[in-house]
Image 1 (cartoon, one colour):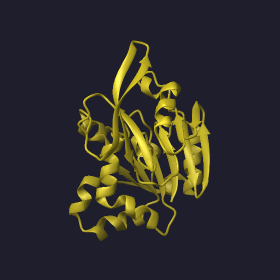
Image 2: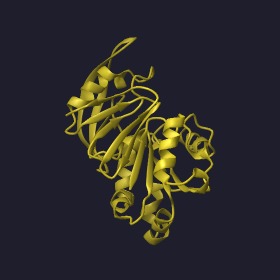
Image 3: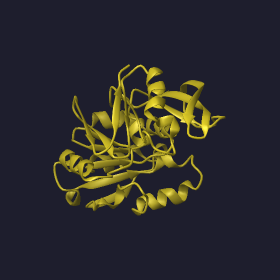
Image 4: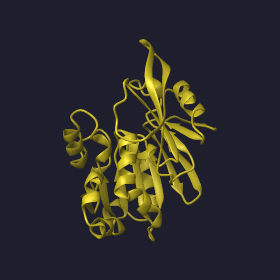
Length: 244
C-alpha cells in the first residue's frame, strides 16, 4: 500500500504529480473509491458529503477525472457480506478517505474491517487521505475538540490544553487515540490556518510533546508521500517535523 496524506486534498500541481506518480498511470485511467464517513459527526454533514462526492467541495479530490468513482460507506460494511465489499477494494486503484472527525473515522475503519484488510492486499492500492483521513493512519494520533467532548471512539487520553489565538487564549479538550498504524509517524493538518489556532506551529509543538511518535505539521499546500519505507514531503507551502 502506498499513501498520499494531504491536509486539503490535491490542492496544487506538486501534490497532483505525486498522486500520478503513486498510481503509476494517469488519473483518467485509474479507478477510485471515496470514503465520506469521517464527516458525519459534523453539523450539515449530509450536504457536505454530497458536495464532496459531486466535486463541489473546496477540497479537490473526487473531481480529478477518475476513470470510475464509487462510494464506500464504512458504517454500512459490518452489515454486508464481506466478499461483496472487499472485491470492490481489491479492484480499485485509489482509496480516497475524506476528512471530518479522526476519532470517529478511526473507529469505523477498525469496526468495518478496513484497518485489518488494507495491509493484506496483494496489489499497490494508493491510500489518499484528506485531513482526518490522513490523521487516522498513524499508530497514535491526536486531535482537539471543543469542550465537552461527546464523540464516538476510544480515546487513550483526554485532557485540557490551552492555545494562543488572536482573540486570546482558548481552552480545548486534547485527545490522543489509537490509529490504523499504516505509518510510524503522526500528522496534524491545516497547520497555521487562521481558523485553527490550535494547529499553529507553536500549538503543534504542544501536540507533539504528548505523542510517542514523530509528528508532521503540514499546511493545506503540503502532503506526505509514503512508498514502502520511504517518506517524502511534497510541498508548495509550509511544514515542520517534530521528533518525539
